[in-house]
Amino acid sequence: MAMPIEDLLTVISSALTDMKGKDIVQLDVRGLSNVTDYMVIATGTSNRHVKSLADEVSFLSLIHISEP
Image (cartoon, rainbow, N blue to C red; front, side, top):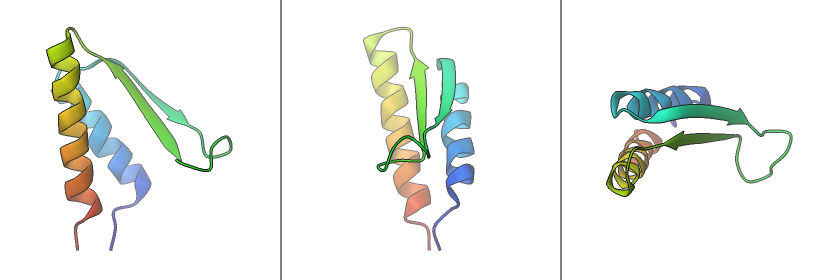
């Protein structure tokens, strides 16, 4: 069974915090978008840092979404 979306949101936010992401914001867009429930926005200190943050979020999302 898939992880509840709120748990995935926590995993993503924690990963961004652990990797020193800055200005992390969670936006609840359930009433505004048909595509997604939440958006998570963060900044990094360099292009390489932002790429690392995005790679980690993508990796963790795939792992937690595909858990049995």
